[in-house]
Image (cartoon, rainbow, N blue to C red):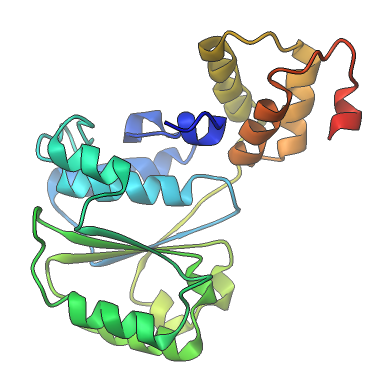
Length: 237
């Protein structure tokens, strides 16, 4: 497992997600009640958990022993999704795969049934980076999607997406985390790692993060083994 804090302490179940309570509740209930939409849009500032929640949702959809819509994290499917090996959960970074050819490949693949689960889930990160032609091709899929396919689009700039695609998805807007939420997560990491971080330094990191948990975790990682008695944290950052 990676020793980088933001990856090491990335939430693995709905219960572990920091903030975004309403979104977590709606997605978890959708799994529990089997009221799954064919497409979702997770929009909001960077570092607020969009891709992480997309993966947890994909895991929950295909968990073999989910409880109240929450993935167990222990079954074969959960473990495979967590490791990135699950063939029925496909992730695509639209920042580097933004053309129509990539969407055409998806269009051909969606017709095939999932191999090991109930749903074939496509997670498209930075979805606003898709070209206009790619968006139009994606729209064709979203208009008549197979019942076994779920799309999860994540973006920091939903305003750049074409309105017709936005009209085909359930949209959830992520908020920046509060100072308290960021601090609670960092305190947990500090405790788990056995670190000694001065309270004023921790407070400063939380303010600098401006609601972006990933930034806060990366800053904490950067100073984890620095003698802050000898260094000015304002100068470090």
